[in-house]
Length: 129
Image (tube, rainbow, N blue to C red; front, side, top):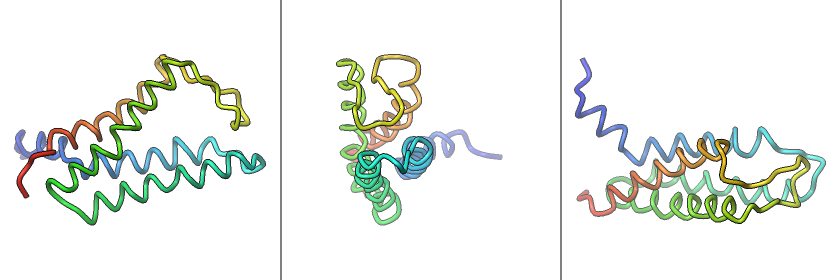
């Protein structure tokens, strides 16, 4: 039988959020929408795929306070940037498909995953190793 406290502790573990968000960012956020015929998308994809490298480094090469702080500083600014882009209603010109950033239900999944990654990092910011 799984202890409720163990489940809560694991659910708030930055490591798992870093891994889950890195995978979702890579495959759902970037690769599933990628148009290889668009050079601008290729350039942006290359930059955006660096983020999961940092996330997986933080997840597997650090632990404790260092891991939590990396989760917060990697994911926190991305959450803020999503909200800024949506608040401004930005329309990327590099994308092949017509994309408009706006405050809508479409923004909930990325905000949930990036937000939880940042939140678990903030909650563990001063944790002892």
